[in-house]
Amino acid sequence: MLFNWGKKKLKPEEVARMFVHATLDSIEDAWPEVLGLLRETPHLERAPEIEESEVGPFLLVVMAGNLDFIPHFFDTGTDQVLVEAILAELSVQLELPVQQLAPKISKMRDAMVKLNQPSKKTLSAMSRGVYIGYGLNDCQEEYFRSLSVPNPRFLMQMEDVLQHFLWDWSAFNEQYRVHAQSYQSATV
Image (tube, rainbow, N blue to C red; front, side, top):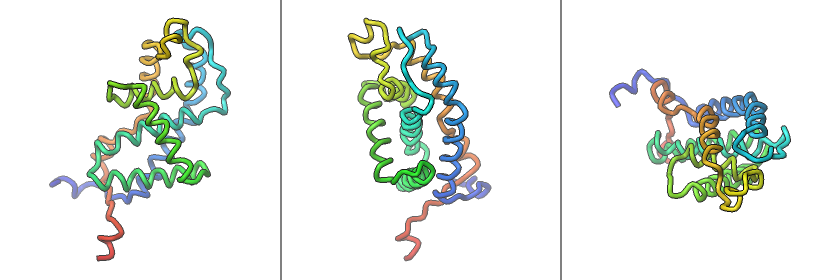
């Protein structure tokens, strides 16, 4: 921790604001291309019927994947404070109460992890989340449809896309330090 003195100190709320705005902006900018890829992928037998306004499942997948990475880059306690701050900021931006938003992200994460077993790779789970979120099983060729599993080529294609939506917490930690002082220790 000798080199922390040169890093800019940020509050969890500031980090949450940066993360949420950057993530929402990248999703908004890239969604038309992602949607086009989903509609035109050669790894599905027929094009899924996804409207341009149906960005919700993709947003849940991206958020679930990113939130899953946070404990790998922050100390225990700081990670939870940061996740809570991100959920609070995201709920403000989406105009959806945290009590409704958090369970949706959690449910998507649980479904992604379950379908991704035994692998523990978050990016792989995210690609399966897109498959689940948009009900793509019915769009696949008979072999994969009958097994109710995603085509591996489709998963690889989605991983290539989704890697661009993962926040680079390593680079973030090189420049910044999160100051997550709990309210109890602040008043003591």
